[in-house]
Image 1 (cartoon, one colour):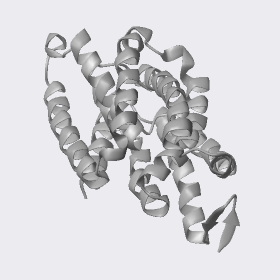
Image 2 (cartoon, one colour):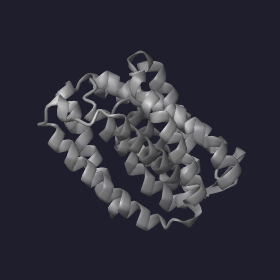
Image 3 (tube, helix red, strand yellow):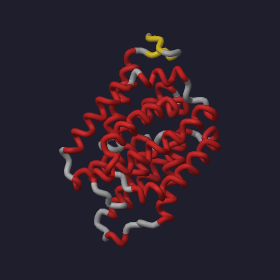
Length: 250
């Protein structure tokens, strides 16, 4: 058993923490959705609420890598539609977070994502004018994204479904998502520190020793995405999102 910054970890749990950091790095640089597999793993090791705070600095570090590489590809028109309602979703989630049963919430999230995934599959054969590129749709998805990212860092699938439905090219999809999550994750920090008390100096030090694995994952993600054509990339995101939804329900 290792004592690290007030955490008692064995070699298996420490390895899973580093694997989490690696997968988060990959997800942020384009292998979208893969980090969702780490959410239940971290919850088992550290507890549901505490794990959400522990993961947040890891996500922000990975966001910085993604923004550094893809910053020129962001579509700010979509970001400006998403930010206000996403911030509102974070605030709502902060207030009600202590009263939501984690298992029931994951079940509801899984159902929502399955329904959304079905809509996305239909959209793959729809014309552009049938895609809901409307302000109300962006507000709804932003609110849901903000709420779910605060509760359990589970907004990756929601944002994937929204940004893919806008038919963004591969690099623009990644760049827009990178800027969105960097902004919203930074916005979440004070709520975790002062309201939920899930981020501390000790937890942040544990995050810092995971930084090299985030960097490795980010590098691997960039290399993988370069080899995937746009059409196949869209189906990869859809497939990983669907599997992640199954995992959340289970």
